[in-house]
Amino acid sequence: MASWNALSPSIVEYFEGEDFYRCGYCKNESGSRSNGMWAHSLTVQDYQDLIDRGWRRSGKYVYKPVMNQTCCPQYTIRCRPLQFQPSKSHKKVLKKMLKFLAKGEISKGNCGDEPMDSTVEDAVAGDFALINKLDIKCDLKTLSDDLKESLENEEMKKEKLSKKEESNESIHSQAIEEKLGSGEPSHSVKVHTVLKPGKGADLSKPPCRKAKEIRKERKRLKLMQQNPAGEHEGFQAQGQPPSLFPPKAKSNQPKSLEDLIFESLPENASHKLEVRLVPVSFEDPEFKSSFSQSFSLYVKYQMAIHQDPPDECGKTEFTRFLCSSPLEAEYPPNGPECGYGSFHQQYWLDGKIIAVGVIDILPYCVSSVYLYYDPDYSFLSLGVYSALREIAFTRQLQEKTSQLRYYYMGFYIHSCPKMKYKGQYRPSDLLCPETYVWIPIEQCLPSLENSKYCRFNQDPEAVDEGRSKEPDRLQVFHKKAIMPYGVYKKSQKDPSEEASVLQYASLVGQACAERMLLFRS
Image (cartoon, rainbow, N blue to C red; front, top):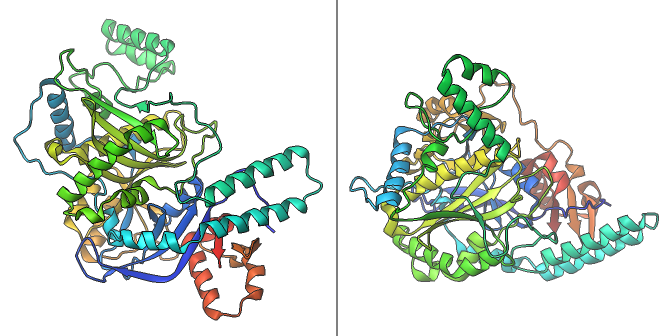
């Protein structure tokens, strides 16, 4: 039997075979093809590893396009924020926002927007009925009872454990029961105390700097004024890094992304923009108090931008799609202050929400899930603006959590003109669909011009290093017990069962197959 760690394991229910959907990109009625599974829960590390193998979530439904068969291949794309430099068009969007905030000026030019992943749900045909059906199919209460009994049996076999370990098992069992016994997003038993009750983190301003850093900054500026060349270089040579957010960029130096976003506004500015990071949890007071306004904005967006009928963008669909996440909130000491998990980044203009960016904060990246905004403010290009804010936010998180250095933008679809804009956020990489290594997008584009489906890794000998090599080590939850697949398969006589499990193992890779629990009825 598998041993249980302090952190609850991921639990997934795989749906064998491939699903066919209407493609939201080329409108082929059955051309979109993908594999999928229902995630009862996911650790952030498991989801990080899954998206690094081409998976992506829509609510609790996690899917992976069948790249060499689907009509519009969807390549996972990530931007490298630490090296990112805004383009001229990006700068225009940021300046347009500043002019609007400062003087109320509204640009009369092109108001075309590029919302980050506004059509991600089209990859599974926006089929909320499917998601609803899957949720009903998964008997959460039975699964919870089975797991509870399994855990109790495990504890009875561990008589030699210390009292401390037994206590941890009890807490762990309770967490599992709460996680699987409810259709609502799972909640960690830990209490997050970083954010003040009733108020999300204000991301409208650059991160606060310590007094010591401010004194160093003043000293650096004083030295630059005395001798802009020699002494400034000498000061840097002493190991003092330049400030990430200098008060004012020199005229002969390009402004950084932070300079453009956080430029000072006059005291009598026409508008005030505040960006708040709110955990996706109905136990969070800020999320709960803003839910109604956020939902109304979502309905307005879906009906105006995607022409959805009212019955397809109700509160149930909104909750399942954007408020129900399988990710377990985690707050490790070496992680970001906000923790890992799913969040809504709310854009408040003069006291009302005008846009919401749904994001996942994972060990190595910020992953953009969806964006919905008020169509009345399309002239602000909120899709581009929010993407630039999320890139800057990733850079901010990386200062404390060094390994968190990428911004995942969902899928890049070269065959769909309206989705090619993601390639303009440079430098960026595409995920090779066969070897799952990252390749700079510049090296991929020539191949994509010739073929919709491409293997980007040019080494013909390269293989998927994370592939399933020992399927018998895959973890299965079956009949109230947790066991390796090697034990489970001895009691199975249906040949299709083995094909389904092996297909799952090949798609999630060896590491996830050994950590996640595959539920089998």
